Image 1 (tube, rainbow, N blue to C red):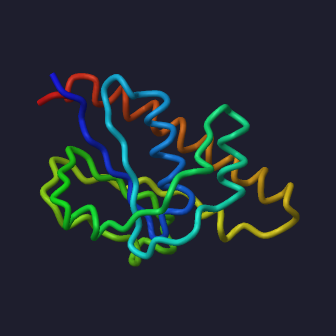
Image 2 (image 1 turned 135 degrees about the vertical axis):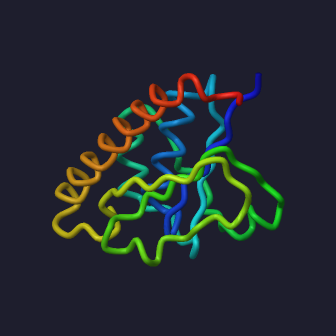
Length: 148
């Protein structure tokens, strides 16, 4: 039985989708293959890199990717999860390929956080932990689905 392929999608692929990919790879790698991409790939958010590094995950070498490039490569996924917040959900990309299940998880955008560097990091930690909790719930919810 193969691992289920999951794509996390956001606008820039610089924060939330990168965190979701990294966390699923860490927590659920025996059952899932994770990737992430964006509609307008940007630059990896250094605050997100720092927040993940605190829990032992290094994404400093990660590259942002385009949803369209993955589609053109013929990639297929069992699950596609958009992770944009509600205020930008109309701009959140949709993966046009064949997908078994599409989901939307709303998380605040770390690139929009204001304040000192420490305040931005503190807010990003909250988002990181919210994504981690959602990933853990997703793994439990799909326990009987993987491989179908």
